[in-house]
Image (cartoon, rainbow over all chains, first blue to last red; front, side, top):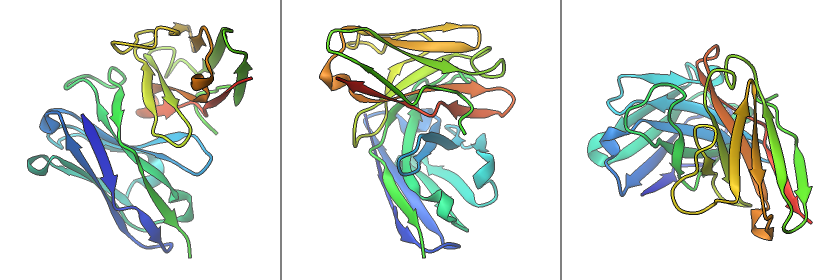
Length: 123
Length: 110
């Protein structure tokens, strides 16, 4: 079971970036997926989640209207489209799988995590 | 400021038992499961404890979790140098309708 993120980099404030997460070793289409970020030297912050069929999507308040999570089950891939980026979005972004295929809020956990991709928003 | 409160640091000597606390409220720890993640230096977080006290199959029997009311704790027995890491608690918050994490505890093995 493996998750590999890509797409991070340096972007100016107000700019856009799309992160990707390639999944392998499990039936991707059966699991909800998440993005969790970690600002430099800081703790973990859940960013967004998407259900297996993309019918249920959630965001943390600070990224609502700016970030869009989506997935392509045929390509075993998860994405995060980030627009109107701000300095405070600077972080390592991890994709993480919901371990159980079907479970209600709080009943699941993140396992595994990808290695992360660094997003730096700076002029 | 994190929704869940953890001490920023903890320490112990090899072989010792160390406990890390995680304090929340009725909308998160009080009504939902607690999860613990270990983040070794320079690596991604990894699940350590799920649903308050369950360990992933296989290893890590030196790690145990517990919950009481709106607080939870992680205990590490037989401390080893390789346990040096950041430890995070997490829970679903019913009021915020999102996952919340503690600020993390940096464990140092002296």
